[in-house]
Length: 178
Image (cartoon, rainbow, N blue to C red; front, side):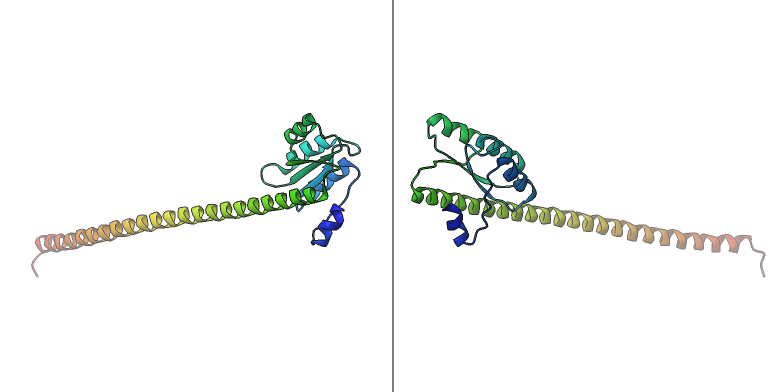
């Protein structure tokens, strides 16, 4: 029923019976953003699937994980959450509860995406500010160098003028009268 409900809302839902196949798919498709798993899939446990999914996602990819189990003991809930599940639901829970929890996960996903977007925007603004400061400093250094060069050129011209004058005086003294 979850598949039909999410597909009716335009989401792509891919069912996997084997946990390893699901994990392989999550590794290759970076658009996967949610996982609803049983505590007892084939090949690996739901706890292992949660843990491995968290390792694959790292801190740069939000994948929301709901663990479902027919065993709703407190210990199982704690293990699921400690293994990386964002939520734990009994398999025989009310469908309305499951839908509400999925909507909650989707809201958190939206908040996370917005936070990432804002963080990226802040980083870009900081980078722009650093670039602007660097450009300003470079312009100030260029202006200072241009001023020093202009002063040096003036001093050089003055020295050349004095040398020419001294040359004239020297020639005037050392040349025989005409």
